[in-house]
Amino acid sequence: MISPLVVHDISKSFGSGDSKVLAVDRVSFQVEEGEVVVIIGPSGCGKTTLLSLLGCLLRPTSGEISILGEEVTRLSERRRAQFRLRHIGFVFQSFNLISALNATENVEIALNLAGMTGAAARRRVSGLFELLDLTQRASMRPNDMSGGEQQRLAIARALANRPDIIFADEPTASLDSRAGRAVMELMQSAVEAGETKGLVVVTHDMRILDVAHRVLAMEDGVVREVDAATIRRAQANLAGDAGP
Ligand SMILES: Nc1ncnc2c1ncn2[C@@H]1O[C@H](COP(=O)(O)OP(=O)(O)OP(=O)(O)O)[C@@H](O)[C@H]1O
Ligand SMILES: [Mg+2]
View 1 (tube, rainbow, N blue to C red):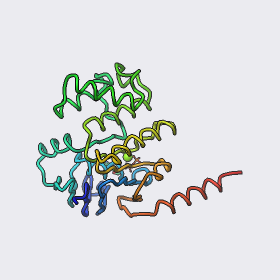
View 2 (view 1 turned 30 degrees about the vertical axis):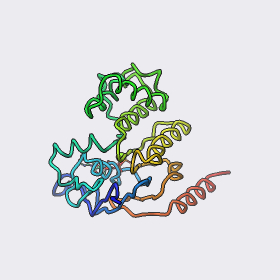
View 3 (view 1 turned 45 degrees about the horizontal axis):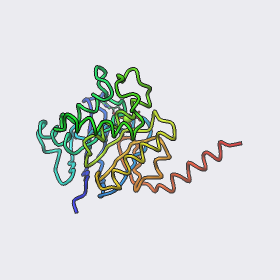
View 4 (view 1 turned 180 degrees about the horizontal axis):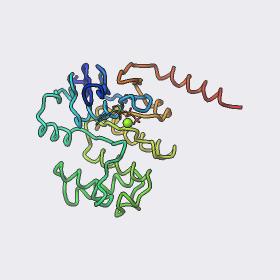
């Protein structure tokens, strides 16, 4: 069986000379079919850069990424954009919604680009909006929506084309615990149903560790695999220490 994602020794640096930043430093890991992988790490350690490389939004300085057996790092810019549209769902940390379009149109545009139009597209949008509790916001512009609503809209757009793999950057950061659980369950259920073959989530939200098959800890651009149970225990101890 082909692994949905194989990352081999990728690095990404920005700038040059004294101002050079090595944001991702020789990272390798793999996501097997049906797996949820969670990446944790402090601010600035390179999580968004890593996810952008995986999501074909940035090209690594070196190393290879294979998604569904396709070596995406070798594709031309145009082929990579097509591959992204067809196979990848990406939830941006900063949402990246189009402010001139209303909520429905923000999702419809993604469907239209992938070839779904008219009534079929409208049905898909209303189904997603129901699941994500956005029906009442369908004709609102992103700037008039709350942070949590914008986040759920960004998730609706990422899921719209039933992507083979989902990369989600802090998808629960603006949500309360109930809404956070709901969006995680939605993404997880796409994986469990086999509709999506893998999910990689960057998060500070320790509750998400509960759904992780594997946890990667990132620090200064370097990734290592850690035991989720150990992290949960450490968290519980910290919470205990902080108590009365
Ligand atoms: N386009 C860019 N040009 C120059 N430096 C960049 C660029 N993007 C990221 N960096 C640098 O790379 C490093 C990693 O940034 P990144 O955004 O990946 O971190 P992060 O782990 O996602 O942080 P946060 O948790 O705050 O979102 C930082 O030092 C950042 O300043
Ligand atoms: Mg980030």
